[in-house]
Image (cartoon, rainbow, N blue to C red; front, side, top):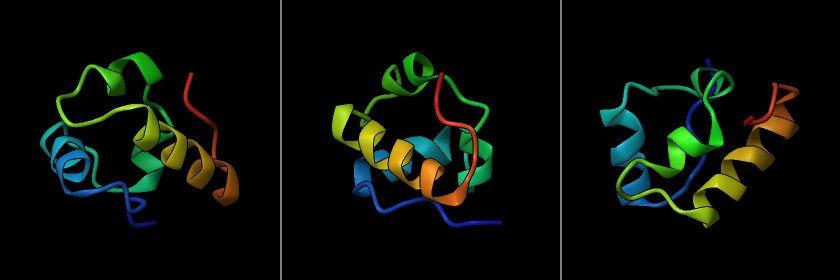
Length: 61
């Protein structure tokens, strides 16, 4: 299990609150769903997408 990428405290709280505890759990998420979470913005989405790509996981749809 890979840790969530460093996206800032508000975004990390939003991800944990939505049940995302690892990078692998984000691989099945949609970009629109994540953007709807309070505290997540385009910068966090970019960081998450880059981390997924580096890990060889599917990127956000």
